[in-house]
Length: 303
Ligand SMILES: C[S@@+](CC[C@H](N)C(=O)[O-])C[C@H]1O[C@@H](n2cnc3c(N)ncnc32)[C@H](O)[C@@H]1O
Image (cartoon, rainbow, N blue to C red; front, side, top):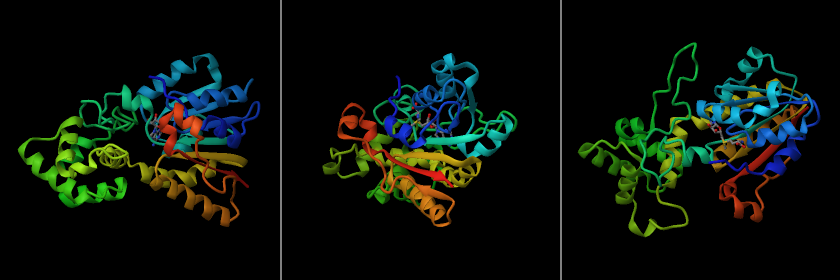
């Protein structure tokens, strides 16, 4: 399934790519945004695309094959962007995009257990393949491991902190009870546990009652907030003066980290904030792309 990129016009407005400038897409996915950037930077602007998911890098390769030498794709985490730029000798960098989280492909086709509507093994790792061939280290933390091995208090904390789930305590308790009877190995098994824990009248609210738990597990498995906080200063350090940084967040936890980081750097005179308030998708965009509903875009320019 093709991922429909969100806020594409706004990404272009704030990244403001010119002919022959080089850009980094730190979450290249299937290359939706990257392709629009490449069109604006022709004939010679280069694009470095990074993704933590090896299959997404393969997907991006086939989407961008016509751009030949103008595209460099690297399977890695954007947290390592500084090393990657040095390793592949990429630059000068006029801007970087981060479009955080998972793509529609992860939900629909990856078979990694991101969706509560499909019966799949509880994995949720973007990097379910070895990320760094040199170290041969595989991320061993899966959603299955968290659900079956973490203590009740750790489960509760993860659900509260990363899911803002108000039934965290009841869910953590029910997980412990049920996993003693039978190991929780699949998404639908977990959904059944959640339905036991969450009072029935909350089962059919505006969002599915499994939404917050699945979000919390995904964030924990991939250390999504830690990665973002670690990466932000590194990303700024590799931009040229005048370079633009555009970030799209999909929940308030991410957005808060970005907002505070931008505010602090602006106070220090390192960046200028281009978006006083976060930019959100129009009703028309949300209608055709429901994923855009929760997207918030913020941008700065390096001084
Ligand atoms: C919302 S999608 C990006 C979609 C892309 N902008 C497009 O238009 O097709 C987010 C992507 O970021 C990747 N990702 C998540 N965490 C990452 C990390 N720490 N480093 C690099 N990529 C990451 C995911 O595998 C996913 O493919």
